[in-house]
Image (tube, rainbow, N blue to C red; front, side, top):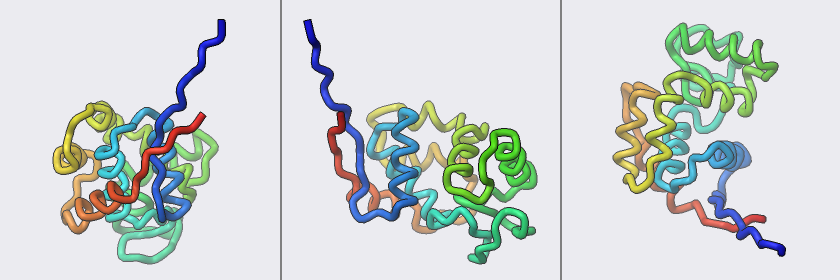
Length: 163
């Protein structure tokens, strides 16, 4: 007897950049499937780096080696331990420290994000609730537009069914 598997629902980001689309897929591939949770992570990354993995705090595209002060990369890793952790992780795991893929892999494996994952996988929360959960991950000093961006992503996401 043949059993048909229903298509899996995934969110796609309408009018998003390739980096935004890759990030959204990366998160969903690892089990974060709640629209509000996805929008929250996306809004935070947009506030931190506008999805530019080469950005050094202040806006210069320096790359990892030449960013000598402030935060670096997708989530503006600022403390020495987190910044050096990115370099160590990519050396150990054969990834490019300046790439979106390498930084997403590091972000996922970093202890701060690992602590957040169960909260992002908890259904039924609002964007402000997920945003509050996210503070430990980023420890932002300036809230900025991150919640505004999260709501923008929420509006851009459409549920699609893929086989």
